Length: 262
Image 1 (cartoon, rainbow, N blue to C red):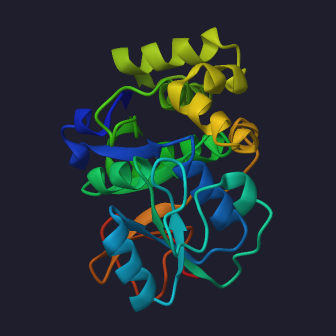
Image 2 (spheres, rainbow, N blue to C red):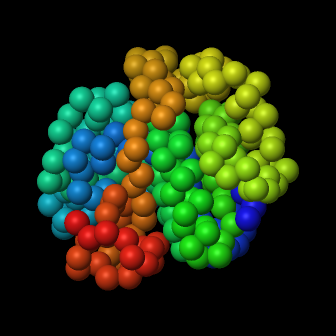
Image 3 (cartoon, rainbow, N blue to C red):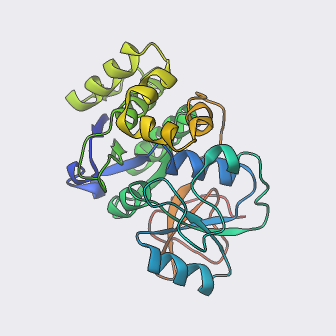
């Protein structure tokens, strides 16, 4: 079994061959982990504002997200994992639309299994990737959301991807690392686990600090703080993340056989 890192979503050329984790550590996937950890039933993924508003109305869901780091007019919440970490979402549904993260999840949606990965859940998601890849006869890919709507390299996402690679390697020392996985792993280790230093050196991290979101950097830097792994389903044509398979969903795309029902 091999693990590789796609430095931008478009570098995941054959998604059907992989169990995939998407990383947008600042901030979408960290936000998703925080929301689901605090009881969110489902997060509906949207790629643009108009679609997000329509999905929110049609599904009686909270409307969350950002454009250029800030929540658009009329959104219930932005994209702050530190804020979400202090809220209860028990029994609720939310639509999330972000500049890079939700687009990256959508781009990976043809893979048999897609999870939201962050530093906060990196070992839990690595364990799940290994389980899914073994069961399905797949390799593993960690996809970086990147910047500029997924077209450009992101320092912070690549560092976080390296952390996931490290966790996977520690769980399975027979795992073969592709060149891209070695590169991400060495970048993570070059920072010696100091995610805040990586975040503050990244362009996007500096932008978030300028907008007053340094608390989100600190929240996102907490390695292995969560066991929550949201993963992708397709339900009624929507891309939906859950931590369990709903009884009514059956074996939708992205749903592993034998997953527990909620």
